[in-house]
Length: 241
Image (cartoon, rainbow, N blue to C red; front, side, top):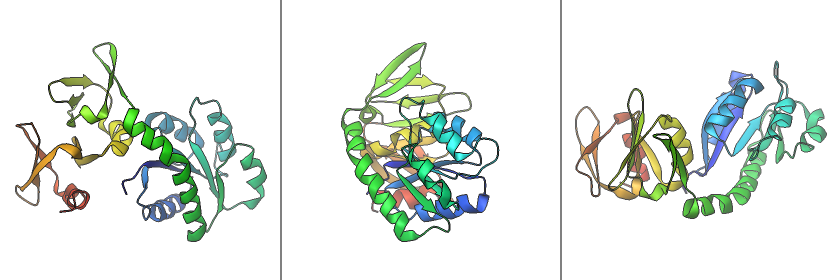
């Protein structure tokens, strides 16, 4: 199953963040798109990455987890919140902020598994609708264009801009490639290089190049795209080669 749940981990303890990210990696439906060490830094990253779910610690310096949860209630479409903390006494308060779940450290894998199942049930219908009817809003040349993600063959980033390539058009925008990656995973896009994101629907041929790298050919496109050796194994797995 392709990942369709975008998760962000917010915790001031680096070890706790790493442990939780490690546990989440075992779920095929989960993609960890970011992390933050405080509520303040999380706010900015949430706006950029648009995660579906926050795994959120309570006790953090400056803006703590409860304060962040309160701030998120002002969002038009806030992410779901799963509190992940060492303090059981905040559970009642957490559910006043519509928390989906409340996990205690050290994390119990069975409880985490149940939390993920609940998230899948809530988000799968939403994501399926997005895949069939969603549009990608792109600001280019002073206009906002609405593009069907299925029409995009690949996206490439240079030093200053990002180019979206369709069958017969090229659109230039300033949005970073990482933002497109987090938004397009449910549509079958995959990063093959630090500068390339491709729609796997159009993959035609994968050819060895040199030093472990490959070149990718897409249906209807003459240009060959570079596949970094760091992404080859994961790409072959996705393509079931």
